[in-house]
View 1: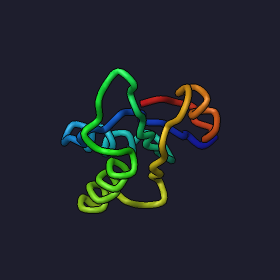
View 2: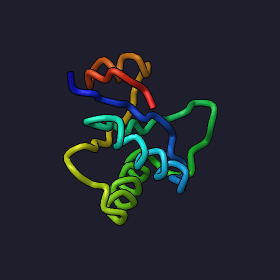
View 3: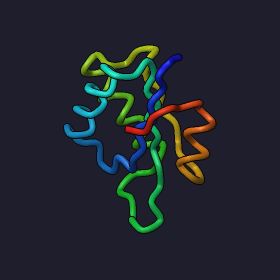
View 4: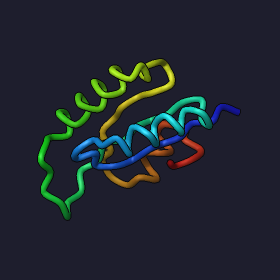
Length: 91
């Protein structure tokens, strides 16, 4: 069975810690879905689209961008998001 992991967060801003978790996650999953979410309790510095672009650029720069990583916006419940992408673990 293919291991699909979801790594949710606001990523506002993206940090080296986030990148480290992404790198380590790729060692244990076949596919990693990065879920960029809005937190209604926070006022984000950047829009979701801007955050997705920053993540894309950051993982491209460190040569992580490949067929194992997807970046999507999270809307609604995390459990519904995980089911939508057939994830079997949450990072």
